[in-house]
Image 1 (cartoon, rainbow, N blue to C red):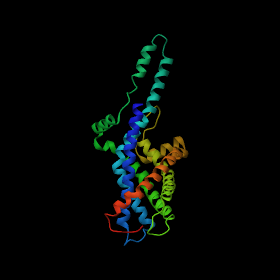
Image 2 (cartoon, rainbow, N blue to C red):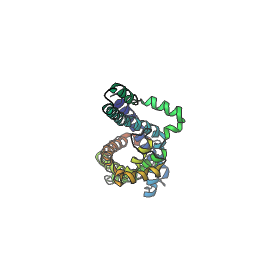
Image 3 (cartoon, rainbow, N blue to C red):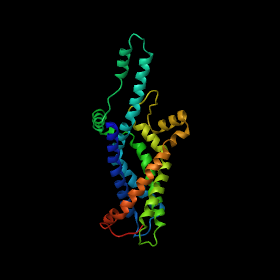
Image 4 (spheres, rainbow, N blue to C red):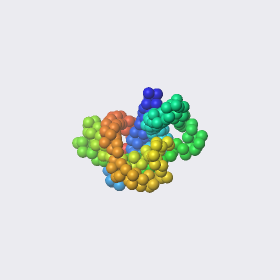
Length: 266
């Protein structure tokens, strides 16, 4: 239970700055790339999304790393307990207690986010918290490149005029559609990222030397369908998350930020 609560806390700590950074950075880059208040071209919208995704990854990768370790701890502990039970059942009748003790000794006590952070910093330095950075960039930058232009154009369909913003429900629906579409599109990269950032391996699980090696082994051992594992659940989570985030952002935060910048139109 404690591990689950800690994982939820890390996830919440990750989600909040991630969405704030993405939305604010995208708005900043759109302003920077705008030309005399004219509507951005698709290429510039994609460049703004690329910049937003890059900024977000640099800040949130360490939290992603911790989240994955905490979420993976339960699976590994369950696998180790199963191995302990099998060792007990297969041990000679004269020494069941000794075998059980030896088997369960391999089970690590649940780690907290603080313990994982200290261990990574001690053993690998600050770079340990950025393990899988390349794979994270490979996931989040394309996500933002797809999401932000798609959201902007869908949201624009609900605007009656250029100077009038779309109703909140249009922003919500646009965020849901754009978020789920982008999430499914980059799911293969998410699978690779998760595998690379898992520090501990279960029984008979592969180890990976990099993105290409990971992709090759997943394709060879599990088939192409493995790259879409969790895509449905990910889309169900991302859709309302970005829908709500866009509504909240467009209801007030964006206007406050824009007031500090020269006026422009998208």
